Image (tube, rainbow, N blue to C red; front, top):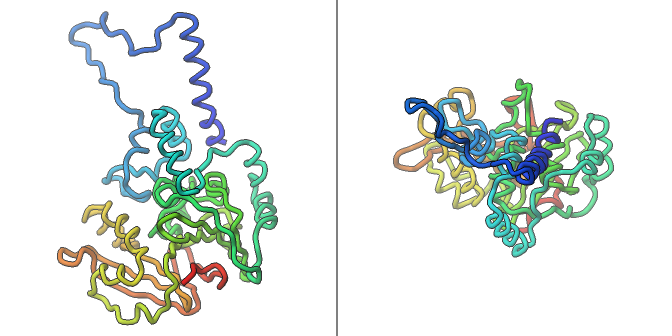
Length: 336
């Protein structure tokens, strides 16, 4: 409901501004000429929503860190975008046309009604588009990596176990929010009740976002979103050991670059806080024969050094909110 109201804010502001112009009223900066000389007037600044949307820290930055653009609420993001200059928007649209990628959308009432508001309505929507595991390859929509993986309106965060949101009363990592912002009918439902939504990017491979029927009735992202650029097996990583540098991991799996960008956004104190809370810098690797989780710590010589390697051949890993199964249909792996 809040998102719908905020989407109407730009239109309402436009109507008011037009009315003021027609009536001859000034809509510029306030007149301070009549204020006493010692009056303290604040210099014009960006709104909190604009400031939040312009920063680049990840969504779970602690209070001591700069506010994240992904921590920005969908409503705040929409308000700040309404005041963006026209030229950058047009340039962004041209970039999408050049690589045939879809643009994130502001959902209208028709799309809200299609996806549904209640758990039952969304389950019906999922049932109408989800494909069983026995179906062939899935046709995933293409989005620009920067929009899908970084500027994604807090739909999810790469390298983040979304189980840490479980106790929060307000969450934006919902199935509805994801489907409204980045529409995709590439939804696969497995026999164990898990579903995942699939996206392709023009530069960073394929993304899988998981949802659990058992934990949340598909309401919230489950576990880690998974990025896959190469079809790999555990054998490719078998020589790695704690103490090795992150560069060695990146040589095997290029998706590590995205994780490293996320780690770099935090200072030493921030990473230490996350590690103390059981959330160390982590990269996830979905393999043909299991799921691999690699944890790191910042290192002055190596950048980041491996501290732990967790492998599960049944694709199930313990997380911050129970177990998550990361198994996907064989047909959904990226080509070799």
